[in-house]
Image (tube, rainbow, N blue to C red):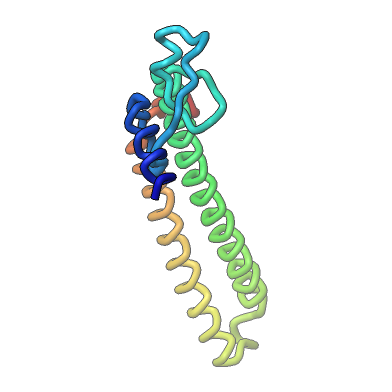
Length: 151
């Protein structure tokens, strides 16, 4: 009991401690620090001022926007490449069927020709929509020039 009273008397005698985040009480060493240094509160071992932190965060946000924009461009490019590859594969198969004289084609081969033409047509339409979407995305995202080059 005497120890509790001694501790509570000692704590009441000290000046109040500053609080930060989830830390209940933090003691600050103030010897040898100027007024500006006393205003810095940080969990990291750094002496960055709040203005410097804000500037760095703004730079990081701009970099994040550039990276998100680039990721989007690359995804469009990957989709475009895959669609072009699929179209070329179907065209090659169609070309092989077209090379067969019409009189020698089976009913199944004629049906396959029609299927291939329909598939190619759908993929070309899909690619056109993709290109349109990529252009809309390019114009929508900030920091892009008319030429489409990154800023």
